[in-house]
Length: 176
Image (cartoon, rainbow, N blue to C red; front, side, top):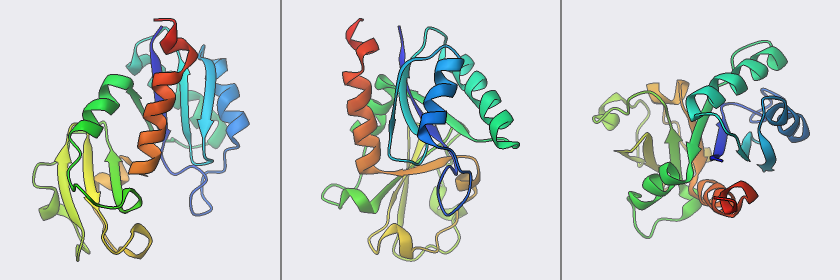
């Protein structure tokens, strides 16, 4: 059975989109997911599901929209996809908390820096379904804005690495 990581957009961040993680786990079970596990309170979950990723995304997005009363962005990734994102990681030696991974299901712009506003010390490099953003002054101080930020969802490197580990260690992954 496939195991997926779900990354929700704008959940429990900056006072928007309140969603208790117990409710998220219940929603995942309600759409047929098994053994849901959440990480932090910002809309990260790992679970097994027998449907293809696109169908899982659509089902989860539908229950989240009913819950929230508005669309909630959902990115679904499997272990192979997260491994590709992590293996292509630029910025060697940078602090993991200063590396943002903007996950997107939309095409990633190859001229990402040219589309950015408020770019000062940040560096942006496109990758497989992701924009890698190095924030040498820290994410919280940055004024960076990018059109892709409205469709995707940002996680720091530590969080993506943790979700990758959770995917690899999930009971569904061990069953083959």
